[in-house]
Image (cartoon, one colour):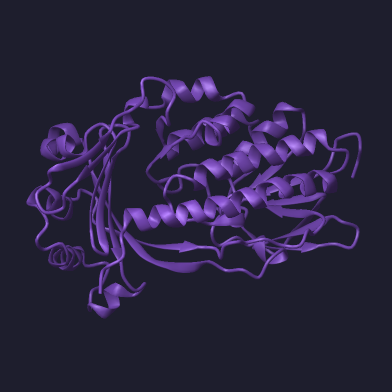
Length: 369
């Protein structure tokens, strides 16, 4: 390490957690490079809406000096849940947004854009796919790239998600299928083109659930509703049914059969998607997921603790990023910083994994025998 410029820090993955870490480091005058396999910030859609919790996601944005900008973009009115009876769409429960505080919603793409705009231009090196890392005897780490080149750093941070290429340097754990698949659908200009659905969903999110299957719909920005058809089924459910996922009509017909007996206003989600259907099998890492400390490398976010998508993952990833950055600017050495960070992050993620597993069971109840 050259003391004049600080430790050489590499973050693999330009997701929310990696960008939060980079932002806080740069606020404190530290240099950092983020490597991202995608070609640009808009290479693919970033997913649905997120509710940011005060003690995790919002705390990370406060540490990054971005909380006010977040509130300017967020939708506090979307912190609302409507639970409907699957058979007749009657309202069973309603939780409106609190008068103050709460968990304001923001589209994931907007939040990522906020973080990208806050870091120094050129920090992210796009189209730089990492294939692996090699910890070195001196406590540093070598990053290996898909083009056959390599670079060495004092710290490599794996913020590269579920199928992390950094994780194998620390752990042999691999994600396993949860038994739940989300089939995603989308509705544009919902207030004018899908007004009945817009009223059904309300300002926030809607849930209707039966044994082994559920329908979830949530307001996004720009008048969009994103829906998830949640199924407890084998990962290859479509193959067992003889369905080509590319045949949207066949997928629709099969899903309508699966939701036979559900209220027609809910089955609208199956009949009228503007974006077709996208199959998303849900994976998690074993819990607890821990590792023996290895100098020169650590993990954050889904790379460290992949959980069901029930509102914890993005929040924890951002808090991981800000906590790691804080440790790196306050501890006396990189290794001390990583040890301090891991001593906080690992126990926290174990507790959160339990809560998220329970959340998935609540969202998609098991089918009765």
